[in-house]
Amino acid sequence: MQIFRSAFIALSHNRFLRHFCENSSLGVKLSSRFIAGMDIPDAIRVADAVNKQGITVTIDSLGESVTSKTEAHQAAEIYHQLLDLIAAHKLKANISVKLTQLGLQISPELSESIALSLTQHAASAGSFIRIDMEDSSLTQVTLDIVRRVHARSDLRDSIGVVIQAYLYRSQADIEQLLADGIRVRLCKGAYKEPAEVAFPRKADVDANYVKLSQLLMQSPYYHALATHHEAMIDAAKSFARENKIAPSRFEFQMLYGIKRDLQRDLVREGYNVRVYVPFGTDWYPYFMRRLAERPANVLFLARNYFRS
Image (cartoon, rainbow, N blue to C red):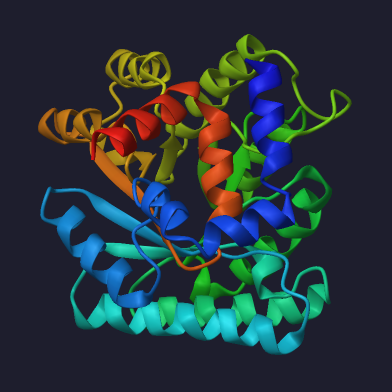
């Protein structure tokens, strides 16, 4: 399993394969299971369809590691358009953003300035921006930027961040975020990390995920538990029941195209569910990380491609 995951994460960095997949009809067809489409209207259409199932949405314009200020501002403009369209269509949706997409690796100050502008827009629209977490080399700078933006009294309810359960540091990070009153999306983590910074064994990651989810659920803030693992979901449900934590106090988050039946079941049971809806032409790295997470995703795509 670990070899399988490492192979697909390595392939996510292959430039030749990325160019071929993103520019071929085969690649686009295969990606459609997990990607809402190539442009903004696709994302809005899918978000509306998901909302009609009683499920909220977070929209992500795919892309990372821009190489110029112009590209960073172009990426930000897409998110500004999304915030306007979410409001115009009265969607139950927010946005999810990677700081490297906003120029973090060019200039942290540039990225923070753009993130601040987007958060101000989200606040004025009654919406919310979630700052995605990337590889561990960017964890601290990401948290620092989120804390500074959140520290503005007019933006405290409009920005949150992601924490990855496979990092050793995550419990300390969550404790600090809770002290600051910052909303968290907890996930397991989808990057290849060295054993010096991350739990190498899946069982340890799972155990840490459960422990961290319980920390979040006991806090007075509204957090998100991002997982498709039914044992993790059942553990959260049991903990909530045992501690009289109302389902309205937190939400489960899942990825577009994965475990759709489970998403609908949770809604029927009275839980809040949000689906992460990615779109855009730069979909290849995201797509490969989804395949790396579960061999079943590869088998599913193969069966459905040859069936069609």
